[in-house]
Image (cartoon, rainbow, N blue to C red; front, side, top):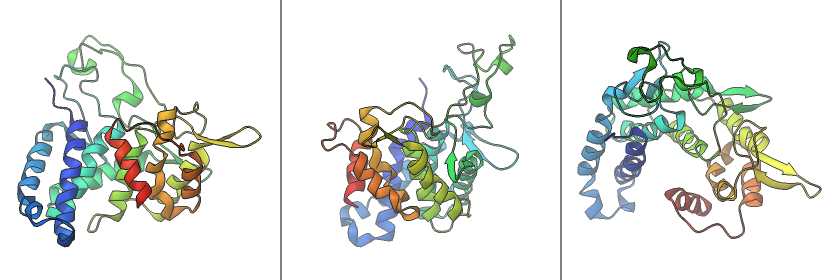
Length: 279
């Protein structure tokens, strides 16, 4: 059995967010819930600390979570994909704000630097990879016959995968980006220029215009040349709305792409996108 950091982040994020809301806007939270905030925070903190031995950082201060070398998974010893460690990063941001603990502030900032370091701006739009550019998944590795360098007997070699982030997993990246940018008391990592570049990612790279009628759809990834996205991916276009502060084009394009009759909600992301449409 393996405890997956990405799933821990997904489970704890709304708990930590509720605790922050209860502290910042107590009038918006029922008294019975406010009384349980300390318990929520303790549970979230304990869950996050389960993954302490998976934490790592580069020499230049970019932080991430990794799979342990002895875990029975295909990518043992490798860094998690960017969206997966940012799932933990979102919870770290909320904990940093609500508790003021240096541990969570420093980790949130380190993961922000990891994302910022992978943003390549081309013609004003940012592109970033699915795997962190400094990691084993992005660079690949060859079998050597040694567990210490192969990382995993299940996957002793792995070809480099340098594909851009796909639009579904990018939703976690975008949420982290905006959450971190707005969080009080955290070190500045993302500039206004960075935020505009990521908004342009949606406008110029993600949105595809085809045919005489210039039908609008989302591509599958943020690179600007990927294949057309699936119908399910179109249904999640609202998750780009938080970037509207950096481009007035974002809401118009979201309205144009969003299916008139969205698919039935199957996952939490469906509820998340519906909530964004009402904000």
